[in-house]
Length: 181
Image 1 (cartoon, rainbow, N blue to C red):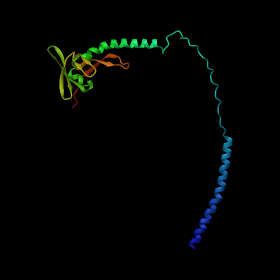
Image 2: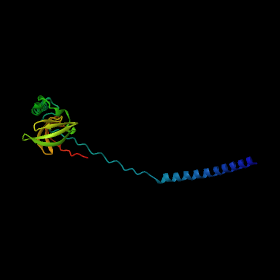
Image 3: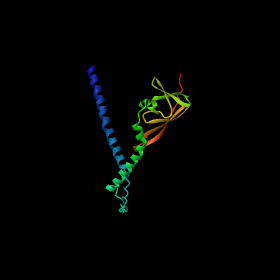
Image 4: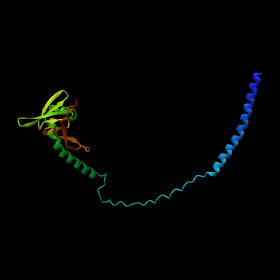
């Protein structure tokens, strides 16, 4: 009896679903057709391309940019710059290095200054060691020469290469660092 009841319920559900399925699909298809008919894409036409007007080459009498003559001029100019820049760096390359030139400037700390024999002396700490620095001494890896020592600052003149590869002078400072507790 229970089986007969279950079969009746399943049959009733199947018939109910079949009746609902066909009518909703028909309505959906009608709605889609109506929507397609109403919507029309609006495309603007592409503008005409601008007319190309060729220009005459007016620099025919000038020096051609890829000629041997232009290359020779550029190499001559570069050689003269190298000679003038060589005067700035060549004395630095021939002198004997000092101990504080092994360390980068940012690894050094100015911890104090004093006057000894009427000449200012800066106390510079590198790692656990303390060094005495006088004007004319060299610091850092960029050929930094001490120009001036005042109470809380050491002023240097460094020689570095710029973006074009030329040697230039650049000022640098080592400032007194206050101890934090």
